[in-house]
Length: 201
Image 1 (spheres, helix red, strand yellow):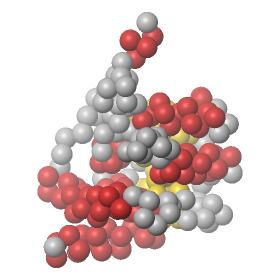
Image 2 (cartoon, one colour):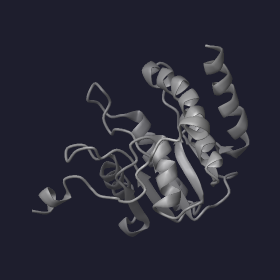
Image 3 (cartoon, helix red, strand yellow):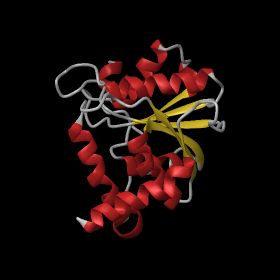
Image 4 (cartoon, one colour):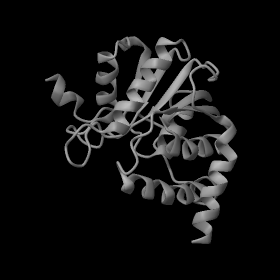
């Protein structure tokens, strides 16, 4: 328990100066990395985490704070494709398709960060997610030699997803172990959309 508490404090403490909450104060960056989540909640309703991330991304693009967007998420089957769902949502919000790149192997936050650097050759970008998630993503990025900042999308109402917050509280110690000890292997050799051939046919 002490280890969990210390890791949570350390992750937030180390990244707070790189976290931005207002568009006006956010420094511009050419590239944004948008971290994926399901477009639907476990109950089958609209996922507010997804909705607010897409809205924040669209606002930053339209305000000139970002020029290109990497959409990184889970595509573990032809029936589940977070990057494609994000692209469709952003197209509906008026973002041009040619500024978006889809990363189909962002299975975890660690993978998304490492792949942004090693697959897409980016080491200076803006991370977009909710604030509680951004702290962990920034911690990973900075320990991987990446000059990243983050923008906090609108948070969900209190009590909306207690499970998500608990999972994040436990994910931060895992991130500390990942970057300093475990060094899990992320796929940095390919970017293949699962089910693409079936859809093309």
